[in-house]
Image 1: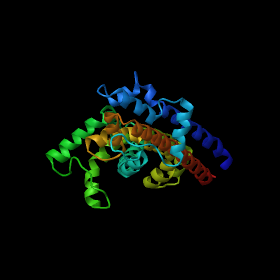
Image 2 (image 1 turned 180 degrees about the vertical axis):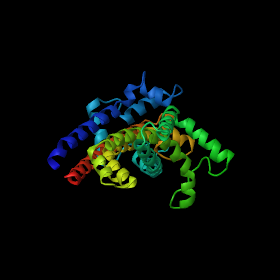
Image 3 (image 1 turned 135 degrees about the vertical axis):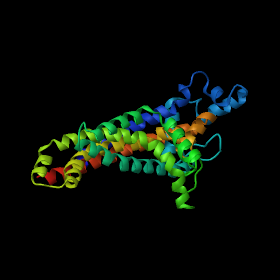
Image 4 (image 1 turned 120 degrees about the vertical axis):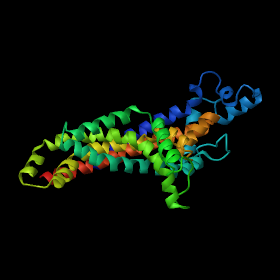
Amino acid sequence: MIRAGLPRLLRAIGVLLVIAALTCQLAFLMPGDPALILLGPESTDAQRAELRHTLGLDRGFFPRFLDWMGGVLIGDWGTSFASGRPVLGEILERLPVTVELVLLSQLLALALIIPLALGSARRVNGVFDRVVSTATFVALAIPSFVVGVLLIFVFAVHLGWLPATGYVPFSEHPLENLRRMVLPALTLGIAEAAVYTRALRGAAIEAVRSQFAYATMVRGASDRALLWRRILRPSSPSLVAMLGITVATALGGSLLVEQLFALPGLGRLTVGALGARDLPVIQGVVFFAAIVVVVAGIITDIALALIDRRSIRGRS
């Protein structure tokens, strides 16, 4: 296992180095003078020269890259232009909100898709299967921010059951925290649930038609045993792979959701940094997101390997 995982680890390190190099070049990807774009046309020549020196724009690529990577390795990710605080501190302070949002959205998505997908696979082309398929296509077609606005209108404005915006830490008031996170988690999770349902439904249909499921039905097993033991378990690798991809890329989906519901997470930090042209924060968030994607990919590969090994043992 270690020998097989070593190439994967080396590739992950290579990917991170490439992304780090591109991150160091973010300022030069802007058209025109980066210092002028960051400071605005009202800035003076002296201010722009000072910014170039601060960001290392007056040096070559390799010295700037090595300096930035050296700082990253010791926890110095730069200083935010807007707040004057360390970038890594800003990221870690906002991280729990985004992690909670992503986890809740995945839990809600899984709670929705497992019964829907397995029920559809049990009666392919039936009424229930057609309703589920139509609902998933509609959920995929509607943008997340539209879903969020609709949820706010129905549950916050019309019914008044849940608050529309704001955030309360879980440590301060657990129940109020969950009340305020329900709508954002649903907004982020509905589109993901639609994708999961399509993937799990297809894998479950193959499992239903397999010899293992047929043998289980011949032995007179109950529908529940057939669905959960002979269909869900063989279908789980595709679902785990989808979960790994979605969790890794959830930061992009959280940008609009956190902004819409006024959640102080990484997504809102990124939007604020883009608006304020806070280059150190943008660089830090991009590199941090790359680390999350790479680590999530490695964890997903390990989980898939364990699942395949257990399924092989279970069949033998």
